[in-house]
Image 1 (cartoon, rainbow, N blue to C red):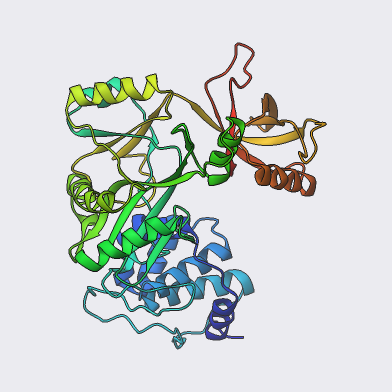
Image 2 (cartoon, rainbow, N blue to C red; image 1 turned 45 degrees about the vertical axis):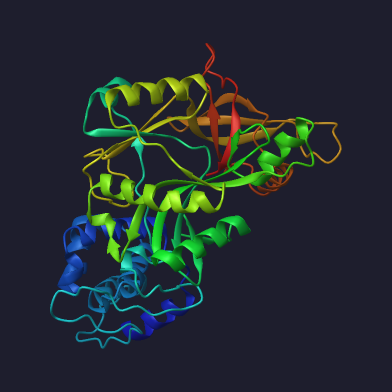
Length: 424
């Protein structure tokens, strides 16, 4: 098998390109314009970041380069993957049988795109904003105290929402919903879908960045409809259905313009403009408020704390939209009133309640290679999630991790008022 046959076989067996590969493509390759250097760009990337890199990751970069329309760079990655897996040097002048069009010699303005069932293409959008390819800008834990962001005029604040990050790509004919992990998901509700299509028919294709959450009868926010429904049932309102709400942070594409290259203030303003149209059509849309002045930011923080919310997100109002987390420049940070931890399940407590596989989850944190017990988590999961937790733990009792939110730790280091959020 030569390198070309190797690449073809791997393409056929390939799964979806992961979000971390997309993030590195945007932040390490495109930022340095390595994708314009052909095979030399791949060699440069591997020289800078490829120490100990595995074959699967190199294949991921090759597939990503092809999907973005840079087959010459992809071949550089294919050759390296071939060498890692077979131990043989690829022959020189290996022909390229990529299914994508060859990259032009001049700096391209658009990438060649091939549409498949799992790789939809929206003609008006640039490659970085295609459905399933958008790497969302992620906040990191704030390195400074909350007061710093309140007093700093360069940072604007928005309340954290207790849901799931969802990017909406709305066209006059179809709407795509993409998760933070770049997976495409189903529409959350008919009302949301209809309002998005109606608005896109009037103003053209647009891309929104926001949070999807489900509201209970009391207005509390939840990550899933099942969690909100459980609250309704336990509160004595079993017939009230949870409401799917899409909270708009900002807009990434509007009026045929890629707004990711502009300042955050422009994206927020465009999000407000579209959000007002959508909110006039359906109460399922919310424009997340933005606090700009110091007085507004103080009010934001006080309100979030008084309502026992997650916290706030602070973003530099003049920053560009760069996918992933930036722990050097801190364009987007989060301050929290609650503690969020990734913990291992180390046991499930027994229950006598019919239909419930357990009462609470015993969890532990890995510290210096050892598991330190952190107490139990007895809320936050739906009936279906309980079944899945029990199933995963039964299959692999040493490697099931969950994300947990707690209002802090007790004096003995145990979780205080902890709730299950999601699987890690």
